[in-house]
Amino acid sequence: MQHFSISSIQTWERFYRANFINSLTGFKSVSLIGTISQSGQTNLAIFSSVVHLGSDPALIGFINRPIKAAPHTLANIQSTGTYTINHVHPSFLELAHQTSAKYPEEVSEFDELGLTPEFFEATAAPFVKESKVKYALTLEQIIPIKVNNTFLVIGKLQSVALEENILLSDGFLELDKASSICSNGIDAYYSTQLIDRYEYAKPGVKPEKLTK
Ligand SMILES: Cc1cc2nc3c(=O)[nH]c(=O)nc-3n(C[C@H](O)[C@H](O)[C@H](O)COP(=O)(O)O)c2cc1C
Image (cartoon, rainbow, N blue to C red; front, side, top):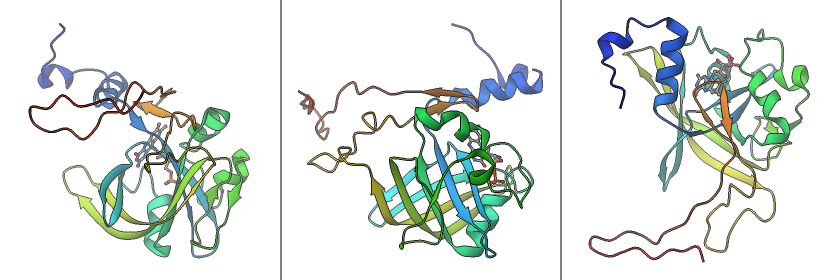
C-alpha cells in the first residue's frame, strides 16, 4: 500500500493534488443542470455532486462551487426557483463535458454546443431533449457551506421524464440500460454495468439476490 499524510499532500503541485482529491471519493452520477434567467436566457452546466437526500418528500441536493467559479446555474435557480437535472449518455458526452467551460452569461451552452432545450409544462427551466432520464425541481433551500464558500442546493422533485423501458415493475430505474454515465474526478467518465440487486438487508439474514 502507498500511504500519504495530509501534510505531504499539501506540498504537492496544485493540479496533481486536485486530481488526487477529486477522484478519491469515487464514482459519481453526472448530470446536466438546465436553468433559465428571468430574462429568458437558458444555461446548461455539468455537475457530479448530485445526491439523493430523501424519498418522501423527494429531495435532491447538489453542491455548487464558490459563486465566482460557477455563477450562472446558482443565480438562475435563486431568481426563478426552478431547474432540471438531466442524465448524460455517450451520444453527447463530449458536449456535456464542454458545458463546464466558462462561457459568458449571455451565451447559452444549448446554442453554443448544439444541445436541444425542451420545455414541458411542469417547469419554466429547460430540459435536455437528448437525455433519456430527466427531472424538474423547485428550490427548497440553499445552505452556504462556510468552510469553503460552496453551497448545498436542495430541491424538491416536481416531475420526471423517462424514455420507455427504463422503469421496472418494482419502481427501480435500470440506468445501465439507459446508458447513463458516471464520472470520477473532473475529467473521467465511465459506462456502468449491473452486478446484482439484493433484497432489503436484515441482521443475520443472508440477502437474496433479486437479479436472476
Ligand atoms: C465532470 C465535472 C463535474 C462537475 N461537477 C460540479 C459540481 O458538482 N459542482 C459545481 O459547482 N461545479 C461542477 N463542475 C464545474 C462546472 O460544470 C463549471 O464550473 C461550470 O462552468 C458552471 O457553470 P455555470 O456558471 O453556468 O453554473 C463540474 C465539472 C466537470 C467537468
